[in-house]
Length: 406
Image (tube, rainbow, N blue to C red; front, side, top):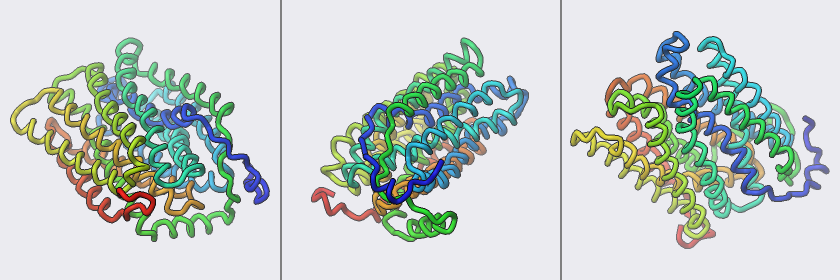
């Protein structure tokens, strides 16, 4: 890849990509993240390994996404959104094939790390692309619509993964992902146009450090980024603990877990739809606080139902539907706010905020996986701490000057 020259950057025709391609490139990463969930407990015996090592296929996946985003965002500011996206999707396809062929848990973990690094380009750059084209509150609406569409991936992922595992074995999950990756890459090559209309930023590592220092020192960026990160940590804590609660406490099969898990993503999708309709009118602060307060209520409801001894799937997944809806309200505005603080650093801001989001998510899954045992309470505790910090950070988000309702 060659960096865009100043003249090239100024002459880029910023054709708006379709909503469909933004959804497709964004959905690759969450699909790969969630689809393996129902199979994780069974991998212990199938690969002759330990539960802790199997948990690393999730935890290190999230860590790889967090670290890769630090580089992907600035690369896209320098070289353009389109080439970085296409190379990332190509890496995803190759790494996924490695996972499918993995003879040991160590090779599977390596494949998952590379898969995560390639696939996350879609999430990072779809946010930067939206910010290239829209202002902050309009970006929140558009990100809401994009994430509403990509929520189909985590909704269907566990159900597809559980069904493939039971029918053809766990390796079939990764061959399925190879096919998806090839199709999405082909679509991106054809449909995804360059949207970075500003002059490319040079300067190498020195510029990278300076850009990130500028973002980290911006109070509004910190408020938006921390709100998004800790709101997401609620979901990732659930992702790390729910398979074990489902099997050990609720006695659910992998396929049943996959079906029930869809309720969470449906709630998130509906929250995204509401965000798409309301964010531009109500403003980021109001959307963020409303979502976080609603998530607090959902976590409290899990505690009440299990405290009453109601150990049923609906006691876990019913409140999680509400929490998913709450995240759908809050996250698009938090993400749009983070990438709008410095429009000239949209790619870097998307990378840094996304890295924080996935880094805390990985930490949440690790903590829950380490302490979960055969109880729901460690999961509830990590989720409660996460949403409390998100709610506190959201209070520092400044009202939008563009919206009297913020």
